[in-house]
Every structure is written in C-alpha cells, then in structure tokens.
Image 1 (cartoon, rainbow, N blue to C red):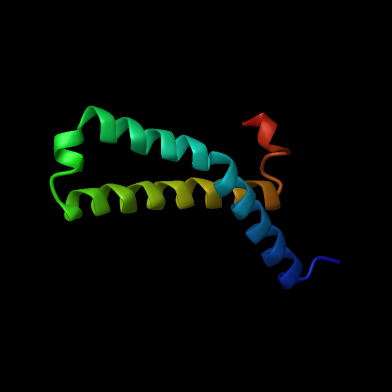
Image 2: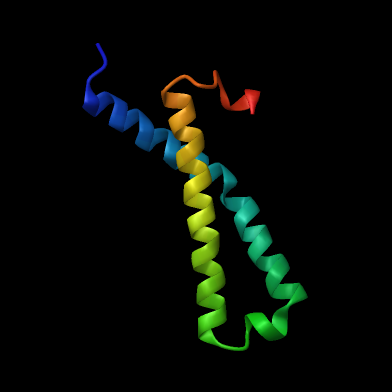
Amino acid sequence: VETPSLIFGSLMKQIFLGYMTSLLSVIALDRWVATKAWAWYESSKHSTLLFFLLQEIIHISVSSTIASLLIFVVIGSIVSL
C-alpha cells in the first residue's frame, strides 16, 4: 500500500541522495569559476551570492527532477540516466 507519507518520504530520501552525490560537482564548478574569474567572483558580495544562489537553484532542480522520475518509476534506476 502506497500512502502519501511513504511517497513523500521516498521522494525526500531520493532528493537528499541526489543532492549529496552531486554536491562535489557543484563545489568543483564553484572553485573553477572562482579560479578563472577571480576578479569578478571576489569583486563584491553580490556577485558571489548571486552565483551561489544560481548553483543551488540548479542543483536542487536537478535533484528533485531525478528523484521524481525515480519515485514515480519513469526511469528504473539512476544508472539508466
């Protein structure tokens, strides 16, 4: 029996796993931009904060999409991606 609370719990678990497993890629992207465009990146708090927020929005969107596809059996496993 699939209850809404079980579906929600499974969705949260998959979002967390997807977020944490791709976190290293996001950190690497952040460090790469900070190295290549250091003058812009360090120029003000606003540019750094804007870049960080953009990264988080993209990261959460991708994790949520993959989690939804896994939970609602659109794809069979993360390996199939």
